[in-house]
Structure formats: structure tokens, C-alpha cells
Image (cartoon, rainbow, N blue to C red; front, side):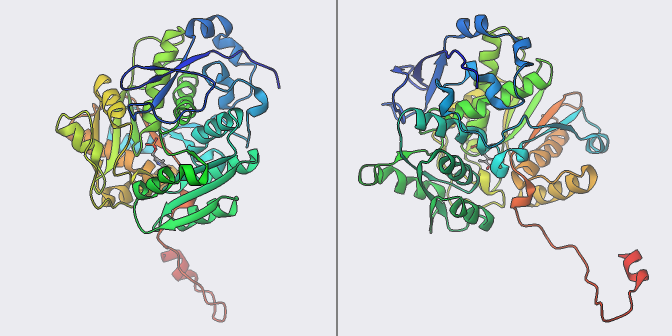
Length: 409
Ligand SMILES: *Cc1c(COP(=O)(O)O)cnc(C)c1O
């Protein structure tokens, strides 16, 4: 592979602005907040143009000048691709709203957009000499970590709440991670990882506790802007757990403007959560910058069942600066939207993706989303990973085939 120039200058505490050197292993800042990677954006603007991208593979490494990996030998590939943006015309017609676009992230390796974040985190871990990584997960992040670490030859330990979807638990273990179920929430699992650092000598890969998953998730913003010919949608509805993707895309748009590839228009960022776990929505509604940990979190959308997020203030800042909002939807509304999108559009969402459609319907009704606005929904994982209700009939081959029964089914 061709060598590219790299432009990382330093890291910066997202809370205090304190600077940290690049090319060293970092977790959280001294203030206990996420670190953000900073680039020489003038240098990037001189080194690469929009048209240069056309010569590159259709994968997120095409934005390499805006990514932190220095040496191409540390890039680990599993066939990442640019995920399609699918128009949802039937739903648009039915809801009488502006254009609905669905960015379908379920096509990525390991079946979810966690591949973007973990591809970067694992590449950087490899570059910085890490040999063992650990993570608490609700499922998809663990699967992506297991896959990329196995490919990179890095030892992996993954801790899941005991009610994590079964497929996730199995795919994580099958792909080589030492996998443990604990009778608690993701934050309890996070404690095992944090407190085990010394004795286990592993690197803590928890959401936002290392600086590079954001950079991977940032590629969603870079990619959608390129796919939309260097424009952005009016509204982005994003199913928000730890918020990596929302924070990452917000950062992407600033970097794209700084290098002159997009203008000052930003999408209104809408953080979508489930009613059974909505700490960000509660903080948004009560005007807080930090969220209170949510008690007894419960929702079928396991990927957004995150009772406390380290980057809460970054999510809330982006939502407010963008003139967006945070909104919760019920599990029943998620189920209805899930089914509706499957039968009307032929798109099998994950429940978290379905939550964004449920939020769109709800907020068109309240008027917080205007019927003239073009909206982008994020489907974060393939629907195939999640249980579906059985709706089929059965046929007994020892009897004559009853075509009336088949016709009327
Ligand atoms: C992780 C995950 C989310 C939440 O993503 P964040 O960027 O961490 O907020 C949403 N949906 C699915 C399917 C996920 O796996």
C-alpha cells in the first residue's frame, strides 16, 4: 500500500483543553475526560484534495490524512466499505415529510458501525505496542474488538452484561476473545476492566476512554459528506449510547470546514435514546451539561442501553450547538418502526436504527422536525443479529397441500 503523510499534532482534553503529546499511549485525560486528536489541518488541506479521493479505494481509510495511524503496516483490514445511503421513499410518502435517507452501517465487517471505531483503536494499539486489550460491551463493540484484535494478533478480554443478545456473546467468543458474562450493567463491566488494569496488564478500550474510537466513528461524517457531494443533511437522527458517533461526526464536520471541503452549514444533531434508558434526554430537558446515571436501564435496543456516558457533555454540547435536541422513544414505538421499515422499504434495521425512525415519526408530530427538512437516520447494525418475532406458518407434508390455506395466509 502507498504511504501517506500523517498530520496528527497532539491530543487535547475535551474538557479542560490541556494538551497531550501524540505517539504515546493515552487513556482519559488527567481530568478524567475524553481526549480528542488534533491535526495540522492546513497541512491536510495542502496535501490532499477532494478529487484525490477518487483514486482511492471505497473504504474509510481513504480519509487517511484525517486519521491518526502513522504507518500503513498497522492498518488492519476486514473489507471495510463505504456504507450505502438508502432513500426511504415509501416512508417519506406516508409520513408526508422531507427526504428520508438511511445510512446503512450494518454492511460493515462484524455487522455494525463499531467496526469503524475499533479498526482505528486496534490499529493505534498495534502502533503503540499494546499486546492485550479489554472492554465492557453490550455486544457489537466486543464483536468488532474481537475480530480486529484476532487479525492483529492482540490478546482480548471482553465483559458483557448477562442479558447481552446471545448472538453477540457467541460471535465475540468465537472470534477469539476471552468472554465473560456478569450479572450487572455495562458500567459494572467497565469497573472490572478499569480495576483490572494493573493486575491484568491490559489496555482499557472502553467507549471514549481511549482517544481513537472517535476518530474511527468520525469517518461516518466524512463519508456521508462525500457521498452527498460535500453537503450535509438538514437533520441527523443518531441512536445514542456512549455517543461516540455523534461526537465523532460533529468533529468531522468541523475538520471538513477547516480544510475547505464543506461550508458552515451543520446538520441539526438529534440524540435518540430509549425511554427505558434516557440519561442524555433527561439532561437535555433539564438544561444540564452532565447526565445523572440512569437507574434500572431497560430497553430492547441493547446498543443504546448505556446508563452513564463519559462523553455526556460532548453529546449535549453538539446537540445544543447544532440546534438539535435529545429525544426518547418507547420500546413499542421501536418495534412498530422496525416492522414498518422492513415491510415498506425492505430494509431490516436493528432496533437502535428503528429507534431513529420512531423518533422521526414522533417529532414530525410534535413539530420539532419540520416536514421540509431532509433527514438522515442511522442504522448502526445489521438486523440479522437481533431476535425477530416468528410470523411464518407450517406445512405438514404427510397431508395434501392446502393451497387455499397458503393463499389466505
Ligand atoms: C454502540 C451502538 C450504538 C450506540 O453508538 P454510540 O456511538 O456509542 O452512541 C447504537 N446502535 C448500535 C447497534 C450499537 O452497537
